[in-house]
Amino acid sequence: MRAPTTGFTTRFAPAPTGVLHLGHAVNALWVWGLARRYGGRVLLRIEDHDRGRCRPAYEQGILDDLDWLGLVPDGLTTTDFRAGPVPQRQSDDTARYATRLAELEGHSLVYPCTCSRAEIARAADATAGGELVYPGTCRGQGPGGRGQGLRVIMSGDAPERFDDLRLGPQAQDPMTQCGDLLVRDRHGHWTYQFAVTVDDWEQGIDLVIRGEDLLPSTGRQLRLARLLGRTTPPAFLHHPLLRHPDGRKLSKSSGDTGLAELRAAGWTPAQVLGLAAQLSGRQGTSAPLEVAGIADVFDDLSDPL
Ligand code: GLU
Ligand code: ZN
Image (cartoon, rainbow, N blue to C red):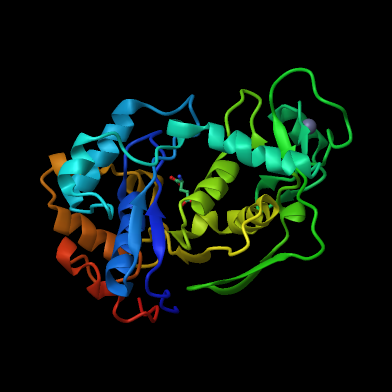
């Protein structure tokens, strides 16, 4: 694994659609650990683009859990963090997304899509990695009737290439992975792919640190960012997901253990961080890891465990 360039800005970006669990603790360990070790800044972004599934109680739970772990976003004191409105909540200013989209519309890259998921499943001529590839049904049709779905034309001459700090050189072709990208859904909600791309750009994120499950999203986010006008793309580091000490994938239930649940059962923050470090391959045992020591597990960047 290569070290990030000092002075980077990264983010922790949970969605308030559920409680934080061990998988989030792993991501937080990588985000804050690398930032503390290699001189980076961490922004907290509440990714509440999916308005139908977000709950204020989950957002509060995220703040409580981070506070308990001792992981404080940069630029905020613990006190500010607990008191004020959370900065960088996506829903705080959704007009930004419409403004960015207008840029793409100006280049005739956007078209309405009225397809339901079931219709796409019937029409799709391919699935890539379990994903439906949108076959472009509505491309070339005029403004649609029902719904507010919008897609962006993703055609390109060459695959998107990037050099993941941990996984090395990657090449992804969004057209064969997913087809034209849905940027607003039929209910008028901005999608994860669009919102995250706009936010990473506008917030000056130049290193994205996230789990390997999101690796297939990276090429399309890079392409979208370029179409939007971002000239300097961020760097990426995709970390391992939770895995059992003996290499097996953790069962859904243990991977889903809520941090609040662990706290109630008497776990300490250091025990949770120690387990997260073990389960994502940063230390050989689940020995407690104090928050003050999270930089240390990133001293040696080889992937030994
Ligand atoms: N909000 C996403 C999640 O909770 C993270 C997105 C990202 O890191 O790009 O899975
Ligand atoms: Zn369609």
